[in-house]
Image (cartoon, rainbow, N blue to C red; front, side):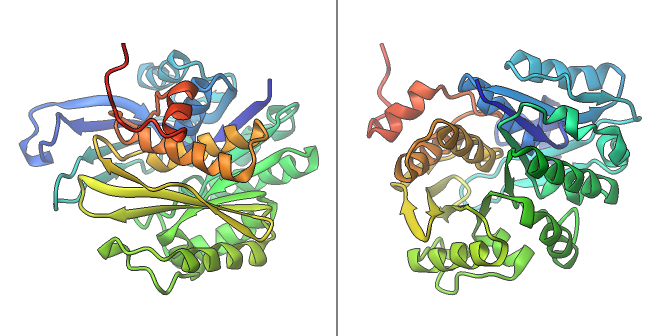
Length: 340
């Protein structure tokens, strides 16, 4: 079985019950998640050998995060123990025309302060088929950025496929810094995953005919974005998620895979959102799965979008959909009827 390594920060997620606002909350639900941890958990649900590399404090809260990953079958042997705190983030789920909100409390977390040399990438990546990270990890600190660069260089030396979800977070760094740091990482990436905002914010590459605030998407514009990214950095494949935002509660969701100069579009799904956080990570995980299973490009993008569509119906960050459920939706069974 192919082994996939993901690298990043796992955090404590705290959110009010249901659709309460922060200022209404008398208590918060606790779960554990983070971009690359979400990918690992999704892959483990698909029956893959997924391993998460990170650093968490050697206290009970750090152990809770590790336990959550183990609960869903993720290998945690590459998680280093140390540091003083586990990062946290607060999520207020939006509804109708009220947008969701995320507040970070992750400064000086264990992974942000970890020294690059703590991660023995030649050992971690030995025998792996795939390495995945996101633009969130190098945004945490200069040390995390260097560790990310060390990882992709080691992956290239070992012949490990590398994927990166650009995942620009304006609350963590500026577009200018992101462009400089991510620009140094991209030459080592085989599969780039982005959305309509990431390419513009990080690299200034835009789809001129789309207006994300109005939910307007133009296919030719996204082909242009993927082509520009591919030509700039030499990616083997570029995937773009297409979110047509009707409101915070309802989106149209689809995706595109640009492979060998040809664009493959998935069907579009009208999605009524239960929890959208982690939707992009579920897309990335399913795309990794499908490509490792040697799906052709059309089947791969269809599977990835169907998986992330299902994730929008699941509370918290992890996508707990099975391969069978994803295949059923990708095959056209979108009725949502009770399975007896």
